[in-house]
Image (cartoon, rainbow, N blue to C red; front, side, top):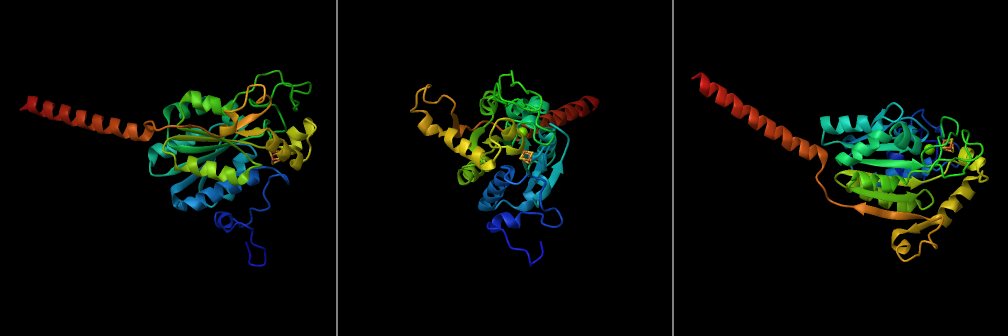
Length: 293
Ligand code: SF4
Ligand code: MG
């Protein structure tokens, strides 16, 4: 960015941007992805994670454009496959920290199978899933998180499918860390992302967010402000939620840390298997040599 341009308000975010020739971004004005991206950069900055230790990985979709704008090593891969690339990176270079930015369609439909197995393996990576309840980039088709009866380009009379609860899915699959935030509560969000970044194992953060230009327009909330207010009015912190009845929680969703546990991490366990295999191989070699004498 040249010196005549004003600096953005968050110096940390500015430090992590690839500023040359890539802005303005592809995101629509008012889209929540920018808010979420900035929260991630603030969390990284606060933890002072060296740039060279981070690899940002994404698949396809509006949120999957994020790694293009961040000044880390990056892989912008194929639809739904971000977790497979991130798994390969982590196995090949266990000291690196893969951060996957993904959307509800990319993560839970095309990449659904990869998601459940990455969580089940508890491989060390941070996954930020932007849940805007729709496929944004490809034109507004319904996704695995579109609520029943909501309209989309492919459900003009209302979606008939039951949506996934992504956090319950991640918990059920065995993820170490599971949290949910909103793009409305941006400062809370960077704290949640910070905790996810510090967790050793599969750390998943679902961010309830908005695509006002497609989901909002289809469902009578065409402005970003209206959709942010919806997030504000329907989110209940996990501590408060525990005190409320099912009736009081109707049409609300729970935010905060939903699972945090310490279980063996995949690449560490894999390293132990390699050591055992090496030892067995050496023993077999020595036995074979002894027989030959
Ligand atoms: Fe954001 Fe929706 Fe625009 Fe994509 S289409 S950039 S999700 S508002
Ligand atoms: Mg989406």
